[in-house]
Each structure stands twice: as structure tokens, then as C-alpha cells.
Length: 441
Image (cartoon, rainbow, N blue to C red; front, side, top):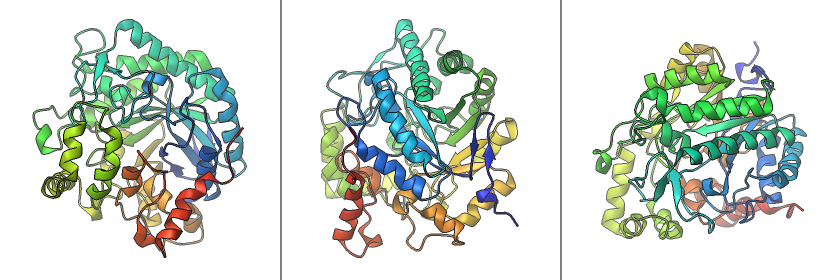
């Protein structure tokens, strides 16, 4: 019988060779000014060579004010097009599609660039965990950002890429408008669900006016916000429910979206995204110093993480707000199934996938049409090729330790779980391999 994982997935304007997408993940690979370099190309080629059907780029800012970290390649100017064209061509050599994720961090920015020390958002309230400050966007600001998303899509198409994804999940700017727990506006972009969705609907409409109807456009959404999952955030509202998101998805599809990508959580990181088997507070206490000047709560957090007792208390609270380690894989499938039953476009689902039989069963049951994978592919870049060779799981699977993500603020992206390697030297060599061959010119 044909393997469901390796059946092509057809969208309105795109066909992907199999049902496995590399989800958005990367690190500080590029130049401070937002220009790209060879390290990012090397990073993406790892996964194309490893067999994924399509790669969803990491967070790509449509405006410098929307950066979450310096050294992330942007799509805010026409002179960025040649780099993204070179990257797309490198990935296409492996019959792999490349979908660029159009993004804006809003108030959620780990390390702001020197150009814009204060973020912008639907609100003027700082985020409750780190205290990242922001300014409430004016109507003119909203129109400027809507246009920036549309221009980013135009540039992605000009670069010969295969589509774009709106990052409307995990606490970034679009979430900050959509979420009832974050958006406190009283104008036409706030209060009711329809008003809170107006911002992203206008983005979709602007993109379609700019690139037409024959270019792939998908939306990543946090189906359920779980905004007050942590005990010390119980005073916050819970945020959007999956039923709210179903209605938003219907509006998005009417406006021109070709696919829905289901995630969870109203921030990043969030106890449920990326859900972990542990919380590496020892590593965090060393890397979090990079964020200390970024928010009003960051120094407090830094001291908390470095304390033996307080650090352990935070770890316990974080893990208790998530899911048990044996429930991480596929934790968003119930929400994906509800959305898929309500819409008429393909649905992708993210959530710790790394077992072929579980992925096949999810597709067969109708929970989703394909899955996206981040951390398990960082651990095993060739996971899809292993599936094709008949393996159900990698010999050394991802442990969901989240060290890859805790390191990324300060160090190169890669798997930092030393137990998966023969030695620390082997681990470091693999992490550093992203810099070979050398810089893109």
C-alpha cells in the first residue's frame, strides 16, 4: 500500500511531494542589518537534503521594527530579493519547496535591534513574562504594517519562492491583535472577534492585491491561546478558544488563504509550545543575560533563573503548565481536527512529531493533511529519509529537552543534547557545521 506520508499534498497553488514540512526554526545566522548569508542557506539545505517536502522559513521580519532578534534575515527591502532567490534555488535542487514566513514580533522581541528600542502592538501594555515594552499602534501604523506584509509577499514571489506563511501564532503581532487576552483596543481593531481579526484579514487582502490569486498563502494560528497557563499569570484572561479560531480561519479563507497551520499558545516560548520533557534552567540562567536589558522584568527573571531554589520552582511551574513528556507528540491534533472539520482547505499541524506511524494515523483519521516538525528535525536532519527507509522513529530521537531553543539567543542553532552524541566534541562539530561552506556574497 502507498505510504500516506509520501503521498503528494496539493494546495490550490502548490503541490508538495510529501506530508512533512520543516516548521519555522532558526537562529542568529545572518548579518545584523538583516541581510542574509551562506550560513542560513547551509541551514535550510540540511533539511531539504534530509527529505522534507517543504521548508517553512524561520521568522522573517517584514519591517526592522518587527525583528525578534538581530541577525535574522529580513524581507523589508527589494535588495533582499537576491539572497532569498539564492536560498530558494539551493533548496529546490532537492525537490523541496520553500515557503517564506512573513512575520512581525510586535511587543514580543527577545533582543531589539538598535534602530527600534520599543516595540509596537495592539496594546500599550508590556508582556507579562519579560516586560517587553511597546507602543499602541495608530491607524496609520496599522496601515504601514499591512502594506509591509504585502510588500514582503511581493518580494518572496519575485525571489521565486513557492509561497508565504503569515505568522499569526505564538504571541507575535498578529496574535496580539487576535487574542482577547492581549488586545485591549476600543476602536475598529478591538473588542469583538471580528474587529480583532480585521488586522490579519486586511493583510490577506493586501497580499492578494499585490501578488494575485495564484501564489500560495497560508496562515499559522494559535488555535487555543492558553494565555494564563502559568500560575503567576492567572490574573490574565485565557484568550481565544479553538471555536474563536475556527471562525477566524473561515474569514481568512474567504479573504484568500489557501491553508491553515495549527499551533498553540499565546506567547513564545509557552509551556505548551514548545512543550518539553524538562526545562533547562541551568542553560537559561547563562543565556538569558542577553535579554536583561530588553524588558522591565528581565533582570528579575535573570536573578530568579540563577537561584537554585527559585530556578527549580520556575522549572516545576513551567512543566506543570505544559503536558507530560509522553503526550508531547501530537498535542495539537485535537484542535487541528476541529479546524479541519470546519474548513475546506488543507490543514497542517505542528507539535513534536517524530514517529512515522503516529503521523500516518493522524492523516488517516482526518486530524490534518500534513505535519510540520522543528526540534525533532534539528536532532535528526534526515528524519524523513529515515521514514522512507522504513524506520518508524530515529535511533536517537529528540528528547524535547529544549536546549536547542534556550541556546539560540546566544549560540548557533543546533541540537545541544550531549547524550545524543558520542562526545561533546562531536556535538559542537555538528552545531558548527552550519558555517560550512562559508559566507554568501
